[in-house]
Amino acid sequence: MMSALEPNSPDEGEATPSSPIETSANSMSTSPQSLRELLDIVSGKQFLKTQPLQDAGLAESLPLPFLALVGQKEMKIALLLSIINPLVGGVLLIGPRGTGKTTAVRSLLDLLPDVRRSKCFYGCLPEDIEAGGIDAVCPECARKYGMGEPLTDTDRAHLIELPLNARLGDVIGCLVDNDHLSLRQRTRRGILSQADQNILYIDEVNILSNEIIDAILDASAQGSYVIRRGALAATYRSRFTLIGSMNPEEGNLRPQIMDRFGLRVVVKGLEEPEERLEAYHRVRTYKENPRAIIAEYLEDTQQASDEIQSARNLLPDVLLPEELARVGIQLIKSFNIDSLRAEITLFEAARALAAIDNRKEVQLEDLKTVAPLAIRFRQSEYMQKYMAAYTSQEEEIKQKIDQLLK
Image 1 (cartoon, rainbow, N blue to C red):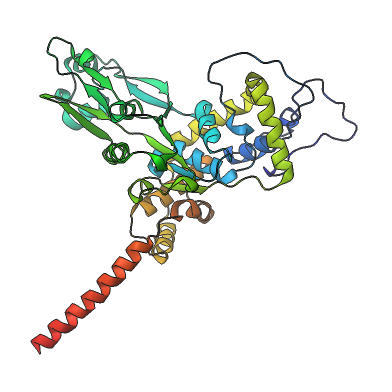
Image 2: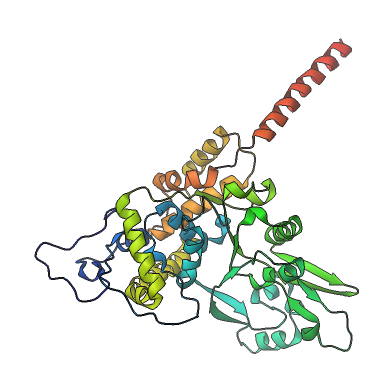
């Protein structure tokens, strides 16, 4: 397998291409055998820029391709695991400015998988009928269900960004208490509702206001939330994958919101001079003509997208052997971690990693790969001191009770 840290170089005597962008992807004699191998090969290929490119002059959103990111393998693996398996619990990227955290998240746009969305204004789903009967959906959806018509459509998941200047009303939405308006006119969905079955990205998550964080915590924990205005109330689904990024220099993150992130990645700057130079070439080309670099990685991006969808389809069949589960639990116990989210994240990330490699059973190597991501920053010095004081007091209480009874 080719390392992502070793870019390809042209063979001796090979003619210099006339194209301003040269890669070795088209000259690969064998196809990648897995998504991880594709990630290594494409991210590590050499990207040469020999002359300025004409600016396309477009104002539309054209993110840098995910596979064009140089290095940062742990960050890329964590982001892929989170979109393959939502039960991983999302990702928190921690690092200084300029290390590519926001760029990496936005580059996921073309890799996001397909999801099933309700075609109804009220959000009726087939599982509502399965759980609560035909009365659990609106009359129109009940009619469609009875006629055998689908209640959902296939759609690509979206990346929803939470603006730093967002207000609480923007986040949760609002209701207008006016009987003269229709329900559609009285209801305005918030960002949390728009993020349902999508990726919710929060940049600078550590500087959000407390009321915004509390709303996100509640919606994330329950998978839905309720807003009220007078006698009017509406319940919105909010089943999203949470991805956040932060710079520790700008402040700490509240323990409540930190606990909501399954995987934690420490993002450092590229250390190898060759990597930093290659990143410079790619960024410069992207700034001058984003369409050129997007076109260069288009075929590889489509292949990666197909691999991600295949991994999601395989995921329900991936098994975690009990002996490996016990190893994982023992590992977490050795760190004195109380939160059960540690096990959930560890095991679900390992299952997603096995699915990436097209395997139906988790291996020990999968646990070793994802364990640092799942366990990092879960120990609480405050709770350790608190529990130590509690244990000491409990022993003192028992001693005094024994003495009194004697």
